[in-house]
Image (cartoon, rainbow, N blue to C red; front, side):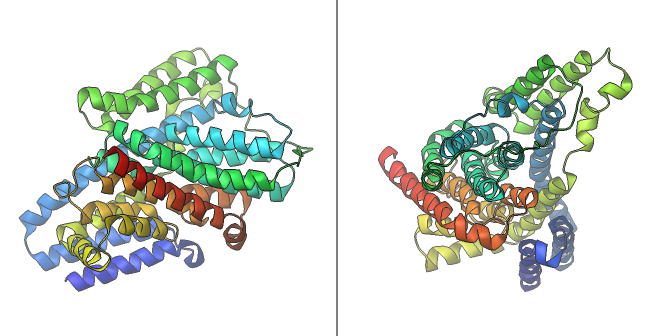
Amino acid sequence: MLTLLICLFILAYAAIALEHPLKVNKTATALLAAGGLWTIYAIGANDPQTISHELGESLMSTAQIVFFLMGAMAIVEMIDAHNGFDVLTSRVKTSSLSRLMWLVGFVTFFLSSVLDNLTTAIVMVSLMKKLLDQREDRLFFAGAIVIAANAGGAWSPIGDVTTTMLWIGGQITALEIMKGVFLPAMVSFLIPTFVMSWLLRGRAVTPPIHTVDFKEVNTSAFEKNLMFFLGLGVLMAVPVFKSITSLPPFMGILLGLGLIWLIGDLVHKDKADNEKSQLTLVSALTRIDMSAVLFFAGILLAVATLEHTHILASLAQWLDQQVGRLDIIVIIIGLVSAVVDNVPLVAASMGMYSLEQHPTDSFLWEFLAYCAGTGGSILIIGSAAGVAAMGIEKIDFVWYLKKISLWALLGYLAGAIVYIVQFQITH
């Protein structure tokens, strides 16, 4: 049974990594893997009571992440429906490509820590279409945005889905991950940005003749500002809510979602139905990427079978025996996340190592959050932000490999060294 489970999981993993050449959506693969693995486990174990209990535990932890992601996605969609991101993007103005890269990089780095790296990458790459005419310049900026978005998401409990998984799972706390990973994440962003801005020195911004406007929505300046700051405020308040109440983060996000829903309905109550149809939270819920949500649910449930059958614990022991050093193991996991999706990688790591062995906020979990979050920048297919940028600007895999990957790798390794040194000093 164990061999069959491992083979099926490896096949599913390969199909997820090769989603684009196979032209099979990774969500379908994840759901098939989850159903298939649990079916094999249930038949092989022949212990319905135990299987039901273990599935209930796995479903509870998975549902917390799914509810949190759905709430966060709905809030972001609500901001976008009101063109709230114009509050930021309208202020990005400079005539120097080098200065523009630094400005865009810092905005992306900090915005992704509050929203998430995927949403931030989409917003900022779309903004470049309004600011830059030369396609080569836009591609270069898209690469810088991917690096900054992934680095910014790594040090925040709500900035990257893998960090959110560790936070909800109890492996990290909000304040400690921000204190521990901020400096390494900043270094992993600064080094590539410095090199890439240096390559653009002396060149002027060439604006497009015909700008690409955001969709026309009947929102006033007050409504844009209200939804932008309200949405960001709710997302930033979730870690505070968790620390005060000790309730799971999804309860905080659902509470905030209800508040935004109420305020949105009150603000638009006097408008005609056809005017406010795109501005309500009901409409925002229809635009959530449910494919991504189902992917997370499927892959987490699939990994759970390997955890309950102790396959992951055995893998952790093998890595400890063969590699020996925990820091090297985590760096390797980060490098692998450039090739395969970091969500199943982190989910597997959470099953490989227990909280008894590595307590909350220990070296393993913080360093894993950094490496899994920033390692995906090394290749364009290594992160959700990279895949989104790839789709918007039609970035070629080989172009990214030649122009961006080396600088992303240097930033990743430099940040890893900074974290290890920082940990040694502070602990």
